[in-house]
Each structure stands twice: as C-alpha cells, then as structure tokens.
Image (cartoon, rainbow, N blue to C red):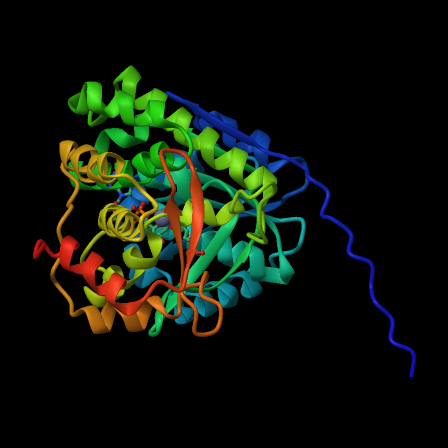
Length: 366
Ligand SMILES: NC(=O)c1ccc[n+]([C@@H]2O[C@H](COP(=O)([O-])OP(=O)(O)OC[C@H]3O[C@@H](n4cnc5c(N)ncnc54)[C@H](O)[C@@H]3O)[C@@H](O)[C@H]2O)c1
Ligand SMILES: O=C(O)C(=O)C[C@@H](O)[C@H](O)[C@H](O)COP(=O)(O)O
Ligand SMILES: [Zn+2]
C-alpha cells in the first residue's frame, strides 16, 4: 500500500487591524466585513450595559445576544454547548459573525465558540479589560478550562479585528487594571525593557486609565504580542534560537497551577506576576539569570500593587498541575526562562530540588 504524504501548505497570512484609541467602537462594523446577516454578541452578564453600547453600532444586522457566565466559570464545556445550541436554533451560517465584548474570559470563550461553530466563523473582539486589550484579544488563542486545569481545550482562531476602546477602562475596578499590568510587565521582561522603565518612572500613571503612559504601555504590549504571533502563530517554535510563541507563556507554568489551586480566586494577571517571580528565581538558581534582573521582577511588579509572594498551596499540588502544562513534553517539564533582559530561552527538566527551592523563595521562606 503506497503511503502518501499531504503537502504542508502554510496558512495565508491575512492580517487584521488592532485599533487602540478613545471612542472607537464605531470601528466594529467595518471589521465584520460585508457578508454577515446575523451577529452573535457574546458578553458576561455584568457587562450587559457595555455590550449594548457595542450592539448600538450593529443596527445593520440581526443581533443574537449570547450571555455567558462571568469570569472563569464561563470557560467550560456546558457553556460552549449551550452557545452552540443557540446558534443552531438561530440558523447561524458560515457567513455570519461573532462579536465578543468583555475581559479575557469572554474573548477566550467567545473566540472558541466562533472557532468551533461550523468549524470557524468570523470573530471581532472588543476587549473591556486592560488584560484582554494587551493580550487575550490579540493573537488568536481561544480556549476553556477542564477540571484538570486551565485552557486545556482550545484552538487557534485569529480574529477579523480587535477594537480596544480605552474609554471602556473607565468602569474597570482597580484590582482588574492592576492584574492587566501583569501581562504588560511580562512583555517588558521578554521583549521590550522600555515598558519596565516606563512603569518604574511613575507607577501611578500606569494605573490611570486616561493617562498617556497607560496608552503607551497598551500600544507597546500589543506590539510585542503581534510581533511574536506573526512569527509563530501556532506555537510550533521560533527561528534563530528564539523560543517562538512560547515566550508569551513567561511565568504561566506556575501561574496556571496557582489559578487552579486557588479555584481561580487569584486573578490570571496576578498569577502571572507570581509565576514570573517564581521562574526568575528558578533561572537564577539554575545559573541562567543574574541577581539584579531576577530581583527587578518583584520590585517592578510590587510597585504597581501586584502580588510577589504566594504560599497558598503545597509545592506537591502545584508541581502535579505544572506537569500538564502545554510546554511539557512527556515527563519533562519545560519553562520559559530569561538568560537576561529580553533574552528568552527554554529551561528543560530542572531538578525537583531546584523547583522546590524556587517555590520556597516565592513563598517567602528563603
Ligand atoms: N487567549 C489569550 O491569548 C489570553 C491571554 C491572556 C489571558 N487570557 C485569559 O484571559 C482571562 C483573564 O482575563 P481578564 O483578566 O480580562 O479577566 P475576566 O475576563 O474574568 O474579567 C475580569 C472581571 O472584570 C469585569 N469587567 C470586564 N470589563 C469590565 C469593565 N470595562 N468595567 C467593569 N468591569 C469589567 C468582568 O465582568 C470580570 O468580572 C483568563 O481566562 C486568561 O486565561 C487569554
Ligand atoms: O498568546 C499566547 O501565546 C500566550 O501564551 C499569552 C498568555 O498570556 C495567555 O495567558 C495564554 O492564554 C496562555 O496560553 P496557554 O497556551 O498556556 O493556555
Ligand atoms: Zn496570560
């Protein structure tokens, strides 16, 4: 029997606009293109008011409101199933489109619904948290959680456009704004140290939704994300020794374990801050990162009110969850580490002693 190999054809890079500004919701219809008759708007129940502001722009379409549970509980199988049933009942076709309005939980879940319905329909994201603007809405990762952990089911499905209206941050509670800065600071460490300098110069400006400094931080973080995703959309690896898209997972191996261990009481951005402190110490102990850059993690994160110490779960529980991280290969754990500022690399299979020692540091015990 002859074996035939199919040709590997790279996906055409279509590209899409990521608009950042004040009062830019009227950009949404342009991004939907000509074709849709129906638009399903996904939003979490507490954000119905914001969703109606977006829906006001969609008078040319038949609008289907898909209200999702708020936060991580909205990222589950039963929620996806209920949404698919609604789309089926509405006769939603391949030329119709989805718009998400919300934080990262909603852009992840609405993106996943769009990715899976009829094997993929157009989606436009309107992120309403800082974290979703700088990270979740851009780059095409969609997903949901299972009882084994975070984002274990999902797909890559790039949006047709992203509209970041900074005015929407006006109602965002400060702890959510601070959490978003966790992913912004991540971009500073992995690729754009000017982000760190900006935050360090005046942390208070980074926490002011209308400040020019916050806008610059948003634009810089999005630029980092776009540059990485353009090179390695599906996380298959980078070029010339760069880890590729896995770089965006800096701090996330421990972060996802902390989120699961605390039943998502620790926000994603806060967990990323903790995960970066952990992995900076791991890299330092492994002789990869110098003391100064390692210590800068806790100082810049703490300056904007992010947590830098965590002792709320046993090392054994966290390690068990880290073993199912997407970067793991078989029984080998892999961590995105820094060899220096903006010098990302992979650390494979560190010893359990090293992993435990880094956790003792995070827990404040050493
Ligand atoms: N796909 C990706 O690339 C990617 C990247 C980063 C994070 N994520 C995911 O994003 C999620 C975290 O996103 P998040 O931090 O935005 O949390 P979230 O979506 O849970 O939103 C946080 C809270 O803020 C509220 N909220 C949102 N916008 C508001 C506004 N403008 N005014 C008032 N309240 C508002 C929400 O109702 C919610 O209670 C996690 O599930 C994480 O895994 C995905
Ligand atoms: O876009 C990416 O790639 C990221 O890793 C960005 C992360 O900030 C984000 O939290 C992502 O959802 C984590 O991805 P996962 O593959 O570890 O679930
Ligand atoms: Zn993240």
